[in-house]
Amino acid sequence: MKFVDEATIEVIAGKGGNGSASFRREKFIPKGGPDGGDGGRGGSIIAIADRNINTLVDYRYARLHRARNGENGRGSDQYGAGAADITLRVPVGTVVYDADTDEQLFDLNHHGEKAMLAAGGEGGRGNIHFKSSTNRAPRQFTYGKEGEQRRLRFELKVLADVGLLGLPNAGKSTLISKVSNAKPKIADYPFTTLHPNLGVVRTSESRSFVIADIPGLIEGASEGAGLGHLFLRHLSRTRVLLHLVDLSSPDPSIDPVEAAVEGARAITEELRKYDEALYEKPRWLVLNKLDMVEDPTETQKRFCEALGWKGPVFAISALTGNGTQELIWALQDWLDVEKEKENVESDKAEGVYQAEDPRFDDSRGPLNNAD
Image: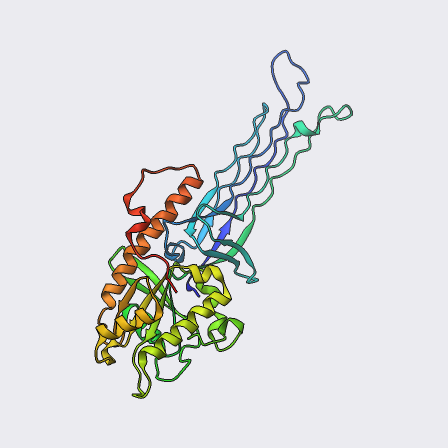
C-alpha cells in the first residue's frame, strides 16, 4: 500500500588527498628527517530522512551530487584538510536502491535516520609513517584512495494515512474517486478492486493526506479467503480506518439494517482475528449509500443501536458526494493533530522539548471504536 515517487541520481564521493614526501629543512638542523603529512579524507555523501520533506521532486532535476576531494598533505607535518560531507535530505519512507543491480541498500523509515550513500576516499600516508631505524630518510608515501561512485534510485513509499475497509461493493472505490485524485475501476460486481488504490486528498494548498482503498474483505479473510487478506497487513501502517457500511438493499425481503449489522460484525471479527493491535486502531464508521434509503436518520439510528457502536459515525452518499466534505475535513483536522503529536514525541526522544499544546488533549476528538 504505497504511493510511489521516484528519482535516479548519481553520487560521487571525494578522493582522498595524497600523502607528502618531505624532509625538514631548517638552518642549523642538518638531516632533519621526514616531515610529510597525510592527505585529507574525501567528502562523503549521506542521506538523512527528514519529516519536513514530502516529495523527491528536487532530485529529478539535481541528478549529480559530487563531494570535494581531500587536500594533499604537506611538509612540516601538515596534514591535508578533510573535505566536507554532502547531506541529501529525503522524505521519511524513502527506499534507496542500486540503480544498476536493483539491490535495495537502505530503507529510511524514521525521522533523522542516516545512510552512507558514498564513502569518501581515505587520505594517503605521508613519509613520516615510514621512518624506521633502518630507513632514516624514507621517500615513500601513498596516494589517496578514490571515493565511492554509485548510481542510485530513490523510491518514496508514502504510507496511507487513512485505510478504507468493508465488504465488497460497500462503495470504497466510489468514495476514493470522489474525494481524491485516484481513478479506480468501479463496477457493480464483487472484487472490482484487485489491487490497492491510493489517492491524495488535498484540502488546501498546504494540507493533504493519503487515503487507500483495499480489496473488499469477506468472512475468513484473516485465514486467507478472498483478496483482502493480502492487504490486511498494510492497514496496520495507517493512522485511522474508515469502515464503510452499505445500508441499502436491492432485495425488499431483506432488512438492510440487519444485513448491514451482520456484515459489520464480520469485518470487525476479521480484524480481531488477524491482529489485536489492528482491531484497536482508531476506526470511524461511515454509513454509505444513504441516497438509496427512505429514512436515512432512522436507519442510521437503528443500525448504531443494533451494532452497539459508540465511536465516530458519518452518514454519506459516495455517489452524490453528500456528506463527503464533512468527512474529509474531520479526517484532516484529526490527522493534523496526530502528526503533530508524533513530531513532538520524536523531538522529545531527541532531547528537543516544546511548550505544551492544548490541541494534544485526547478528549478533543474521535476515539477508538466500541463493539
